Image (cartoon, rainbow, N blue to C red; front, side, top):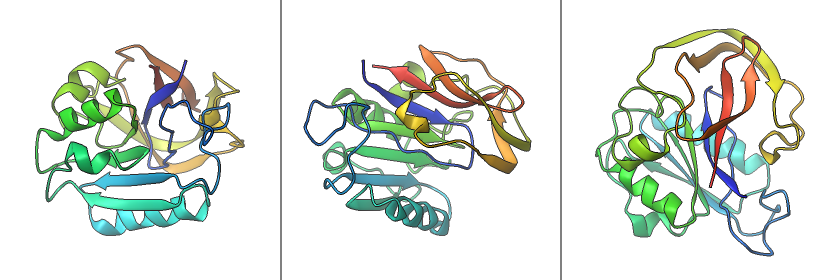
Length: 200
């Protein structure tokens, strides 16, 4: 089964792929490098954060296009999102409560979605993605501390391909529980979830 709804509880971002049957995808489900893979970073913070993520994703040479979209200013349409294989979402104070439903529709139609802090906290995202797809109880409290990579529960997951170490001076993590069929792929060294995904 393809696993493609991912929540990252950190300021470190991993981008998962669109689940599709195509020769553009390797068996692990990851995009093959330089195969015209187009992704979008949806944000609502200072654009310098989004540009930083955009640059880091381009450095991987996995993506032919990494666009950014300021959802703090306007709502991306379903038509706009359909040209991308996957979307990474972070921030809060989005311009429209409908963003969550647009993202849920996009996922339903085959798009890959990654929700990173703090879009997955509290009521940042509204609509169907919050009710049907959120993988941790976002209404619960959060904490932060100096942490490193803890247990990897799914060592063959493409999400952690070639990941052997990870450290964050300020690791942000939820104190909430797993919901909506979420599966913990990896945890922080304190045991709190770091990467959670859902089986489609």
